[in-house]
Length: 59
Image (cartoon, rainbow, N blue to C red):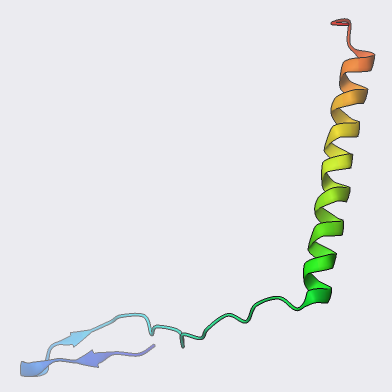
């Protein structure tokens, strides 16, 4: 575990900060995959809601 020594011999126990890096933008293929997965997720949620309403006694 890393310790930092301050003036006067005091020891502090702090976590090390991770290296900071800049995120890379998604490639066109990744963007297309995100769109396809988003549409699939929306259809799945819509289907679940449709089934829930169709089997309930509300309608």
